Every structure is written in C-alpha cells, then in structure tokens.
Length: 263
Ligand SMILES: CC(C)(COP(=O)(O)OP(=O)(O)OC[C@H]1O[C@@H](n2cnc3c(N)ncnc32)[C@H](O)[C@@H]1OP(=O)(O)O)[C@@H](O)C(=O)NCCC(=O)NCCS
Image (tube, rainbow, N blue to C red):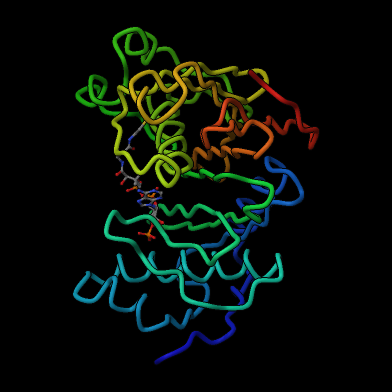
C-alpha cells in the first residue's frame, strides 16, 4: 500500500480510550490536538515508509506502532494537516510533517498522540505507563540519589496512592520525548531531576547534565494524572521561552486551561 486511508478510530465501547483522550484534552491547551484509544480499535493503513519501520517486528509491536500513527494522523487532521507519512528516524523519534511537532505513547493496551503547530510549540512530550510499582532494582537507573529515597513514599492521587518511582519514570520519559528532538542528544534518567506537586498534579523537571545542549538552569513544567490504571504525563514547550540561541528557558503550565509562564 502506498498511501494511508483515512482511518478514524472506532470509539464505540472504547471507554478507556475515551477517558484517556478526555484527560489529555483537560491537561493540554486547546491548540494542542489529542487523539487516544485502545490499541486495536481501528484498522490503520500505513504508508510504505512506515510499514518498513516495523517489518519483521512481532504483531504486538506492529499493532502499537500502527495505532500510534493512526492517532498521530487523527491529531494532525484536527490541525488541518492532510494525511501523510510519519516516518521513524534512525534514533526512533517520529518525523512529524513540516510545520508540526508531536509525541506518541503506548502501553500494551492504550495508545495516544498529541500534536501542535511548530509556530507555537518547540516540542511536545507525552508518556503513559501502567500505574504499577516500579521495581526497586530500577530505582538507581531512574532516580538520582536525592530522588531515590522518596520512591517508597506513594504520591496521593484521586485514583488512590500512586507509586512515586513509576510516576517519576513516566515524567522523565515525557521530558526525553519533548527535548530529544530539539537537542538530538541522548540523555539518561539521571540527567533529569523531578519534583512532584501532588495537589496540583504537576511536575517540574530540571535537566542537570545536558549543559552543552540546553541552558543550564532550564526548568520545565508539566502535568500528570492517573487514568484507567495508567499514569499519564504531558509537557509542552512553547516558543514563549525560546532563546536567541535556539534553546529554551521555560514552558507553560496549563492548569485549568490557563497558560502560565515559568522560569
Ligand atoms: C524513547 C523512549 C522514551 C520511549 O519510551 P517507551 O516506554 O519505550 O515507549 P512509549 O510507548 O512510551 O513511547 C514510544 C514512542 O516514543 C517515540 N520516540 C521514540 N524515540 C524517541 C525520541 N528519541 N524522541 C522522541 N520520541 C521518541 C516514538 O513515537 C515511539 O513510538 P513508535 O516507535 O511506535 O513511534 C524510551 O524508549 C527510551 O529510549 N528511553 C531512554 C531515554 C530516556 O528515557 N531518558 C530519560 C531522560 S530523563
């Protein structure tokens, strides 16, 4: 197949997907498009270049990849972008159509994508993870020393106590997805320090070890939630904080839909 058919996810009975989409909508400003659903709820036709990206992969991987492209195109359509390939770069990042930025995430059951115009946003990050306890043997990989000692203390959330290590993991993956396409420099979990505000369901993240690529004191602010047994985190990097050097100094928070500049 050389072109993707118009494919809208079948929302019927997809309560988990709808809940995820509603949550993303509530967490992001109105000029960020969102689409989410249960994996397998729609048939997505892939472009040849996308098919090649998962040739030889196991069916579950092909299904999540296809769902991601389906939701990415659904989000882009909301912005007026015609259906077109979203190739996978050698570093695995999705290559968004010119003029757009976005982010894709999937668990074994759910998938979603967010997208926006690059006139307003430098980058977007989005991650979803099953809200399960992070194995203690991963603490030293995910957490900086000052973060690890708090991992055993759950975070209060409307869905009940949430594993702090899992939340930090999801936030750091979100930060990576938003920042990597800008800096094109791989950084690990220990390069980022995260602070969580349970009451506001927000986070701040400071990239402390990628000084060459990002301004040294950059603080990024995003939001998280728990939806349908999944931890969800989002981060939007607006052009508002862009520096002359092409980096960025801050992002907006979007609580209650009200953008707010941060340092
Ligand atoms: C890239 C990464 C964050 C993806 O997370 P994951 O748990 O494997 O999978 P998710 O479902 O959450 O997200 C996968 C999607 O992320 C996107 N992605 C992959 N690499 C990416 C990159 N370099 N930049 C931005 N997005 C990327 C892709 O769209 C991918 O889905 P696709 O292959 O179907 O298109 C993870 O694999 C990784 O490499 N982590 C190590 C780096 C890191 O997280 N550092 C932490 C810094 S604080």
